[in-house]
Image (cartoon, rainbow, N blue to C red):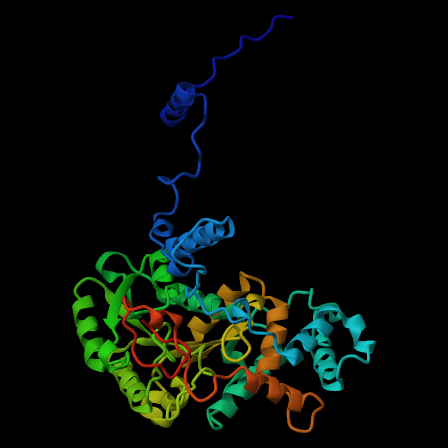
Length: 424
């Protein structure tokens, strides 16, 4: 039998021939993912909290350990609020409930108090297979969201909170990025503008860059203890409208890194401004339990919004954030937090629920710890007295915290701030 004649191979596309040529020149094949081909917006991301200053600090620490002589003997890392890394001890009751949930065999041990066991049993009962190793609902465990809602109602003097509007998260940062993904859209001059305070927590500038939004800076008044002035908001908004569509106003209260606590009057002015200009409010309130100065008081944006009456409370769109990383607990590494949305369009809220479902669920140990923080021991329970004693030991006595950087004559520092950060 005659063999059929083999046809010639089809010519390679131009791009393929170019790739072979490049490989032939150096014997290596080009990377599919390179600096030229990668997402350009990721290259714009800068996160100073973990940036080059910290990298240099780590290098200096290593040099000191190796015996290299320096004009100093210690490196103080002030790049991030990490209480446990700075020596704060974990709160016993929080860790007891966590340990019981992670290793339920301990529930039979007399070492643990009955109220810690009761909390652990309650939470394990609603976990798949009674294990924190199982996935949960994407917004978080329902009874924990209910406990968060009750916490918000206590904090805000009885203003109702709906558990269906509460989404648990991997710390507050995860929730902030989720909301920015919903809010950012457009190209060119129609790109979303996001107003952020300067100084700011770098999560916001990094997230804005990653999502190709426009960062709109408004400046806090340093000479007035980093106060927020609505006139400055108007200036920033007016200038931004020439090159983007400002849609989001981010507020950090208490301030990070500035430590100021906004007065009720200031919050009312901000809400009126957002209402007038049709801006979506994002209230970062993770330091709400860290207000120390006499005469200073934390007011949540939600509480003030609802007390301003239906003209505002039925219209202004708001999301607020909280976290177990801050406050008296400082449980940064266990990654627990939540956000509460107010006046979100129901159709948009369906999209939000879809978006959070992509990540499956927040870390369950973080959800457990959040529940204990939202629902601490009550008077009469076995752990109440020790919990109160340990919690009070963690609070500054008599005055707000000061910064070690104040010892340097080259650094100007304002008087101690009401909240945890004295900003130089």
